[in-house]
Image 1 (cartoon, rainbow, N blue to C red):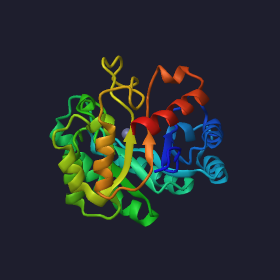
Image 2: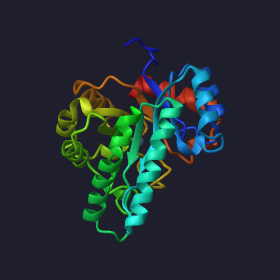
Image 3: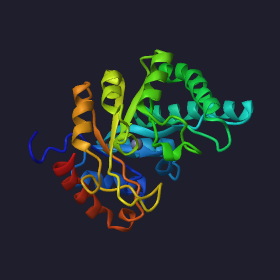
Image 4: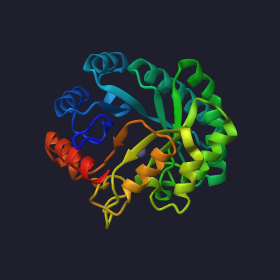
Length: 272
Ligand code: ZN
């Protein structure tokens, strides 16, 4: 790889949260960053057709749409509504040219995790036909167990791989996010097992101490995650896609976002 090769660099719009979608497109373009993963929060103010037009005209590669999921619920009606929401999100992905919807699978405080996991499996099974018919892949992103109460009952790559094995669809795979998976003693072997079902790869770093469990992710190289080894493992498994920088950070959101992009490019070269 050439020292200044940014051809696989992608930024999540949540990384530059203060920017509107329009500003993010202009900023990434200006910084020479070719990939964008779009969060639905950034589509909402424009609506999907206007967002689609902005993205199409931008020349940026839309890597994925974040996020679908949140399947578990305490009533059957609410679970059905979640499935409808996911079908709509799949339609939105098709409109904006995203080949992939990343699933934050969901959890409900008080609902047994075993029930939540069954709701997730059943929910994905229910929406997969719509994803396949729309030509959109779904990717299960395991979340760090600190989010098992209200964000995701899928907390290890092993669980995600088991769901992919159970559902046997070419339209379903997994996302490896170093922030969520770095601690897992089974990570290397589960990455090998996932092989070509790895659909996306997210990077950031783990700060010590972590000051906020949602919005204190570190810049790559700033924390304790061995990002390079994990990258090597996913590439050894066959992954050749974009490397997506997904940093939720109260600290970095206060920066001038152009400066943040330059910092990310530097960290990408030295620490990813
Ligand atoms: Zn992620």
